[in-house]
Length: 219
Image 1: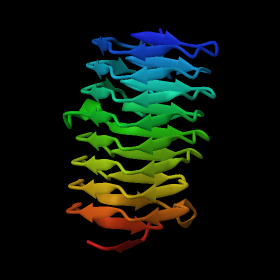
Image 2: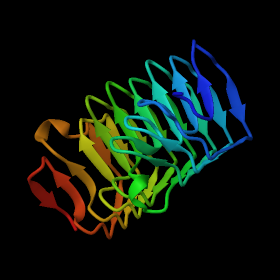
Image 3: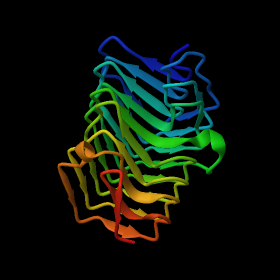
């Protein structure tokens, strides 16, 4: 089913607190291995979410779909896996949740893919999280996704820290370090963030920021 561990839908404001959610597998595309949220606004607080698996276009740990919102706070989301085009940590699709004070960490294995994916007019707040050790990028913004990425530590991802295949409102005050590609990688000029200030870039293998898909600057 779409939510292998917990499935939340129908406008629910459920609170999920102090649970261990592990070893689940979604059998459906667009699902969530650990938690699947559809058209709802839950509070997901202080859980351990690990060793869950999602299929394509889902989220190994958590998947938000179809105008969902809510809070994800104080969770450890780690060692979740996925197939192609899914997020190992959190998939945010056409939804506007607040993702704050979480550890979203993996083991650099091939199936760990991307930590957070923001897509399809999603507009979340991503704040005060650790996003680390994913096989691809730490955060991917694509398909008209947007949002604010503030005060995060984005480190030790195999590809880029933040990969922009869409524009975001802001990238502010993040530590972006030790990533295998660029700290921030744009693809075309229209994907410039509205604001990109006060970030600390350190020892990203390809450089700090690749602007507009063709002009690398800062190492």
